[in-house]
Structures are given as C-alpha cells and as structure tokens.
Length: 224
Ligand code: ADP
Image (tube, rainbow, N blue to C red; front, side):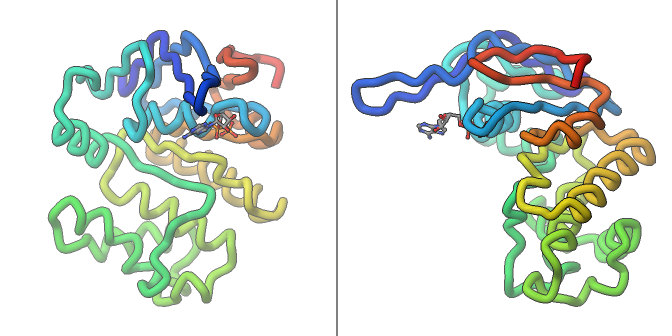
C-alpha cells in the first residue's frame, strides 16, 4: 500500500463563515492504481489532492504514506517523504522559462541532492516523444508538449505515486487525449500509480478506480 487516507475532512474559514469542502473522505492507493477523481469545479478536488500530497493539512482524519503516519511526522520528515514517494503534475505545468526541457526535468534530481541524471532525463523525454525537443525552452513548446515535459519531471525521482491536478484542464481535445494516453501507457509500462483529478468525464473513464467528489462526499463510481 502506498497511501491510506481515513475519514479526511476539510473546511476553510472566510471571516465569520466556514465553508465545509468535504467530510469523511477515505481511500487506499496501491502500486499500479490509476485513480481518477471527477467532480465539478469547486467540488474540492484540488484541496483533496493537496492534502493527499501533504501540501495542506486536513482538519481531521488520518493520512498514511508508505507506512508512515503524516500527522506524527516532523516537517523535515514530511518533506523527505514527499520528495521520495510523490511526484506532482499541475495544470499550469510550472516549468522554469529560462531552462530547456531537459534542464527542467533534471531539477527534481538536483533538489534531492544529485547532479541530475541526464541519461535518464533524455531517455524519458524520448519515451514521451520529445527527443527532438529537449533543448527547447518552454516558450518554444506547445501547451501539450509542456505538460508532457512536466510528466517526465514528475517521474524523475521514481515516485511511488504521481498526483496530477486537472492536467488536461488547459489543453485542446487532441492534446488532452494524447496526455491521457500517455498516463495509461506509463501506468501499464512501469506499473506507476496515479491519482488524476478532472471535471472531464472522458478523462475520468481511464481510472481502474473512478471516484466522484460532489457535495462534500467522495464515492466510488462504476457508472462514469
Ligand atoms: P476544485 O479543485 O474541485 O475546483 P477546490 O479544491 O479548488 O475545488 O476548491 C473547493 C472549494 O474550497 C471552493 O469553494 C474554493 O473556493 C474553496 N477554497 C479552496 N482553497 C481555499 C482557501 N485557501 N481558502 C478559502 N477557500 C478555499
């Protein structure tokens, strides 16, 4: 088991008012899982993903990552856990504009204290079909290509789990389909676990476990 969340609840306080985002959310993620969380905008998908990724804290409930209870861990232990267990992909890729595609994907290695595994970076960029683009800067890449570079960057430290927040949200249909195909291929070629949030029913169909988040409740859905 990579991740176990039990009875997570989260609310935000805005002045006098409290907005309850979700209650009693539980889920278990194992190696090879391809999990989708679908829900309308504002349903709390990003908030949930941030909590699963230790970027935010729940009000109550427990989160266990690779056998370690996150609530009982120090800030340093949580950062270490996040860097070794998790990879992140955001809708707005967050590539650094002054670095090439190859340099961008080496950054997680460098943050982890290494020089950057150039041969692995090149191999993965080749795998996603960007062999000819590795020396291009983000501004010289299409939106779909930038997202694919962000996918490689998320994989560089061999995470047990990749969390992707609305990754196709900003792409046209062709690029969205290509990205979804890539997630499926990585999942089956490397047994890589993913959690992907989306408001798009077509994207949600790829999950081996499909969840639906609405009105504060997470449910498993077979009907998507
Ligand atoms: P989704 O990703 O499904 O679109 P979000 O998780 O971004 O939804 O947001 C869920 C709800 O929580 C929204 O109503 C949003 O306005 C609110 N929200 C998100 N982050 C904060 C915050 N930091 N402070 C207050 N409210 C927030």
